[in-house]
Image 1 (tube, helix red, strand yellow):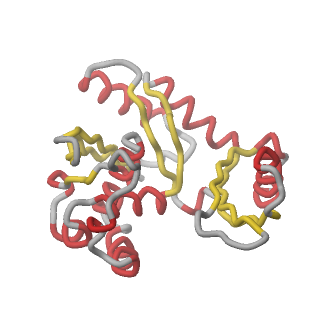
Image 2: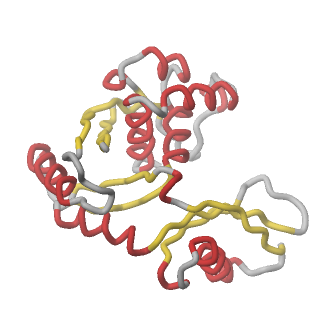
Length: 223
């Protein structure tokens, strides 16, 4: 097991470049919940980079998450959504409602009498392991999402798109930053969704895939 750590630096008002890319290797026989090694690696790298309380965004593979869609009646108040999502996640994970961590977002193109909401969740105890790990290292766990979400964010913003993903070394990547309108211009999206999905599928089982995910996580801080 290994973790990819990527940091971005602003190149100009439109672009960010890869500043740091590391592969943090787990010792032999360490399990997913044995994170002392990861805490030590983050602490050491935090000292090397200077500063205090570095912010960390993290992605988990699909095997360690539950995801789904819930349909709310259009008239259901948004303040009731968290409770309903929490119940949905707890049922999916077969845990008590207060034993789950979750997040959700409405799908923007939903029309008609229902609102489609995408949710993601995992066991709260599992998330606490990562929070304790990063806190012990002097880092702050700011956000957690799925690998797929982060990978898509990365490839959509990658300068050169699919071509750069498949041919450039990760340390040479540049990413388009969102404009003041909080959206990447349509003219910058050179590749179709199908082309991006195929390219992501090609790299996800390689070290490049892990760095794409980590880059997508880093871009989350620029949103």
